[in-house]
Image (cartoon, rainbow, N blue to C red; front, side):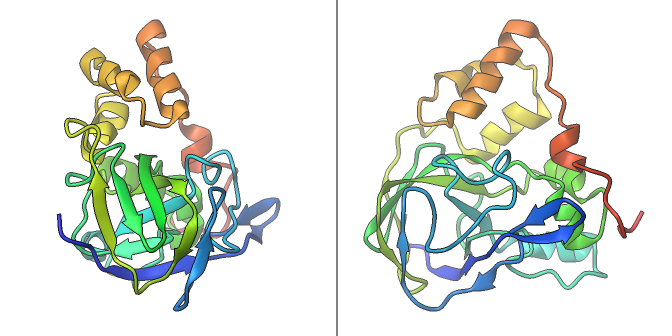
Length: 232
């Protein structure tokens, strides 16, 4: 795979966007190099560490190609990066071309794909549409998270170069299908559990489904607290 050009690099500060609701999805473009820590990119912050941030979810990568889909579905919104709260925007990498555990060199740093992103209720506040997290989940257009294997300086001028592929049979798209679109299919869940490069949270959830035959409640992630000022 040839080096992938970084189309946009974004970071943001957590701020209050409603009563008792803090978000860092309003990220701003960065045109200079930053230090990428195992805990995060420069001064980038997270609004809700239940669904974002931590060592398994340091960077969110969202394919820029997906915005063409959202412009067709919701033309009333001027969609553009980073409307999904992403840190990295590129053309040329999609969920069906990236595998869990893939290691990329970016500048001086090494990144590893840890899990797909799970759409959460902050997309509702960003878009003004209450159903947006559910629609994003159904679309399979999630993007993915990275953990940092090696810290270092990175910049938008540095391309992403795939240097190692550990699980060629488990793309991000397949992980999304097994977790959300066929959430009780045993073969898919077993594949998730056996992938040691998948985040502990996702593997534990898959193992729990195998043991109980039940799906966890997604309502807090998708809808959070009752949003105000959203379009029906």
